[in-house]
Image (cartoon, rainbow over all chains, first blue to last red; front, side):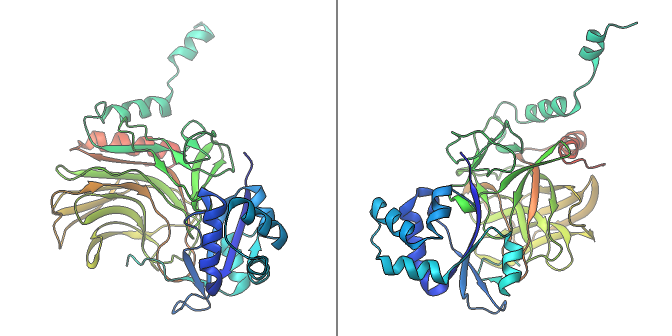
Length: 116
Length: 266
């Protein structure tokens, strides 16, 4: 199997929708987008981030509302085409390393478990 | 002149020999714990172990070599580290965002000294917070881990209660680690104290402010950055946790095995 690296930022208000979609499209999508990012460490999270390998068909789908909607329908995930348009248009998806993507958007990680 | 074949037979195979000796420390599963080494023969791309590992591909499963069947897995695709190779050395690269791997719960690690070992290097110079790159739960509420501390970039060993950070007891090594330079860490944890070695050199011992209680289940796992701020990532060459007393020579043996994986001079 070949994988595609993607760094994905989803706006915080769309994160529940994105999580539902990710989990519905593949079991390997469950648990995504749980780490917050914000312009400051004080937060709150304005985006949620996932970074790493995903299956190529999902890499294509998260860049194209039509493909995303088609995949969601095929998987039985209850979303509208408008949902998919908003998710794709407002998210930041790149092949960047997470450090580079955070710097490009001026974000830092927040609201993850602190062990200090 | 000695035949070439004989020379080959007599040539030592340090890494394999060391690994075999380290595996023997588990006594065929007599002693609780787990043992990991990054490599094509130990890492699978998926959590089920169906797709063999490959360089620059994700690691969804890493085999426990100890015989205790505590294979670590990650079901979420984007939370899987990448398996990398450089200069003939293999490691799992954790991104500092969301990557981690865990094993299934197993009987408590408490009851003897718990030894934790890890060969790792850091991949960023500004750490998110203190992070525990290799952890094991040692009782109902406590876990012990090895990692790097916030801002000082110093390696650390730590015991804390899962739900009560103020009870954290930790030892921090004196010197900062340099990103990209591998190190071998070792911590020995008893119910009342923790001690730390860095590359074979003792960093001292500290009594626990909150002694480890009895009971509970043990989980073992590679963790990643936790905490607010800049990004932190690290590479794991190998790690080991074992619940038994070890002699100085046995500690040196495990350290030598990990050093051979990461290219560390002890």
